[in-house]
Structure formats: C-alpha cells, structure tokens
Image (cartoon, rainbow, N blue to C red; front, side, top):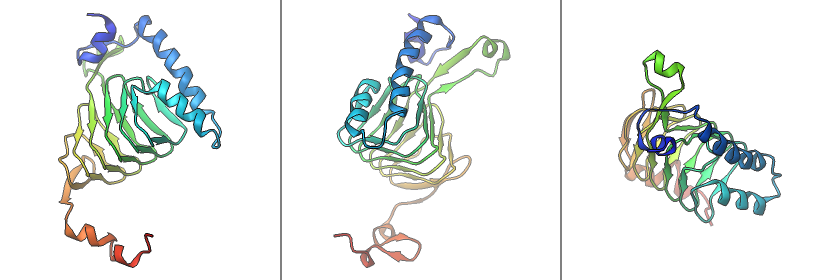
Length: 204
C-alpha cells in the first residue's frame, strides 16, 4: 500500500512523506489562485473549482478565502452548495456534501486526527476518516465537524457547535458537544424565526 493509499484508508501514516507534500503543494497553488480572484471573476472561479475539487455540482459557490489542506482534491460537492467566507476543510480524506447545503462562515470540517501517543504524533503520525453531510443542511457560523461524522438530510446545526457524533436527518442540533434539540416539525413550516411567520413575507 502506498502512503497515499494509507492516507485515504483510515490507517496511521506519516503526513510528512515527501511524495505527499509535493502533490499537496501543487493543489495549494490552485487554492492560492482562487483566493486571489476578484468578485467579478465568476467564470475564473468556476474553472478553478473544477480543477480543485473531486466533484463540484452546478450552481455551487464558494466565497473566498477558502482554506483546505488539499485545496478540495478529496471534496465532493453536490449542486447549489454554498460556502460562506473563511471555511476550512481538513480534506486529507473524502468530504461529501450533498445538494443545496449551506456552510456558514468560519466553519471547520475535518477528516484528520492524530494519535494520543506522543511519540507517533511527534513524527507526524496522522489518520483520516471521511465526513458525510446530507442534502439541504445548514451549518451555522463557526461549526466544527470532526472526523468520521455523518449528518443527515435537512438537518440544521447551530452556530458554534462541535459535532463529535453522527446526526440523523430532519433535526435541529447545537452545542459542544453537539446534541439534538428537536425534530424539524410543522411549526418550522409556519415560522421562520421565533414569532415571525413565513406567510407574512412577500416571497414572490
């Protein structure tokens, strides 16, 4: 097994391997270009995203700056995904984000972990577990998603939460560690915020 295969397998490996660092540097050059694009350069951004990411669906948009270990090389984005400013992807393994999901500013989605054993950690030991985020989710500002987590469709994660375990579909969750607060229900179809009704808004 090559060191790159180990990196994607969940096994321990040394992230300081030169063969990894040389490929990673090429990826980061594209990210650097992306983060220097002007707001009016939408087509240029799209072209760079298609080179950077494993998959990127139609209508997906990422506000620079983006910070990603591999510039999105292992990130699979569905259609109409939106990243706000300053999202960090620790994408040493695969990150899957399905259609219509919104990622708030300063969010961190991490696949990488390091062993508690200090001797291995000192040498650059690392392991990486994929993250899966479903369709039509909303992760608020400053959310942290840890390695191996799966978040189900339509789920909302409150700002500042640290998601350490899987979350099912159709719930509102928040906290550190993140916990399910309630199921998304009929009231959410009527009110968009506290006592403010959807019906009172002109959505035409």
